[in-house]
Length: 409
Ligand SMILES: *Cc1c(COP(=O)(O)O)cnc(C)c1O
Image (cartoon, rainbow, N blue to C red; front, top):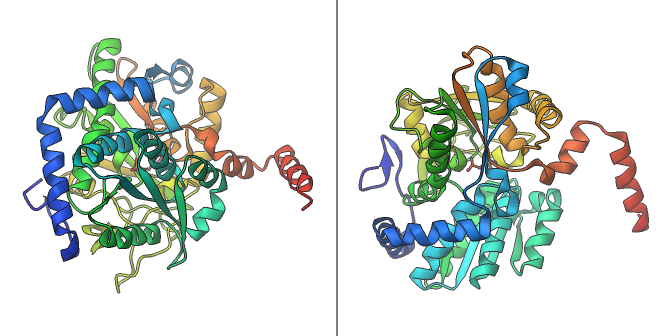
């Protein structure tokens, strides 16, 4: 990254004047934390006692046998507190906020996972917490809204635009501009204005540090390939950082192919041909937008991958060909999910399953003395409504109907 927050030609910090001082504070706080080894120690120790770190690296022996090629290992970020890698980022930012002396946090959320993680962190650190969520997502993700409110957060439904994630981000920025002195904006992924892409990636690098140490210990050498799904890009940046300097390890990012990358119903920005360079939401990256810069509607079965932008760091790594990008369709995701549950007794999140799809496509073409790692960013039991619906399970429908009857509907 250069001093203006650019990675190659991507990134930067396109922010209103009123936020300049806050960003300077944040950059200084982050820099101090990064240079102080005791900060990382405190962070690691909290992640151990609160979020089950280090998360295991599981050898998937049945899947390995099934495909008959490379040994398949799964990095288990699903075992974090709140069920996904999001905890790594929010706990890190929470420690930083405490050091900066602020008492209020705000966050945007799409599927509700980042909002849940932030509400959890705020409860633990004793911060006041407001979460912005598109009105459509509030309706779709009722269980997460319920838990956020129960943990003391205020959930604000956003009624602008398409009433989804990008509108929630805009509203959170509006709040921040009004309350700069008291409030920190806990950005949820490796996007947004600098220093967020780098700072979020730094907290998430705990995944890659552990994974590299674990695979070397278990397998005796580095893996041939590492796979991660890419929404905003934070879990991918997290695991990739453990292997970036080792050119022999191929890094593969998997985006949401939705109904197919030629269907117009997907969220593939770096793979495919629908995204173009643009500046929005405080940073420059490849956006899914029309020729007037209006953001397009995106689609994915996985709510957490359904976003118009992507990490500027990944845009740069894509351009430099250090990370290869692929897309998985909704249909492929459901098949890979089914196989993973049956073979390993593991339920990956729909987001994470995108990485499994690409790994499954490639495993058999690699020799058995090679290993590959799939980053399982989260657990799938949170997705039970979507998954049961997609599998068209009649007994589940009956269950929902009988529950509705209990409420007299
Ligand atoms: C939020 C989320 C993602 C997408 O976010 P990234 O920043 O791309 O990691 C992926 N998987 C799970 C389980 C999530 O909750």
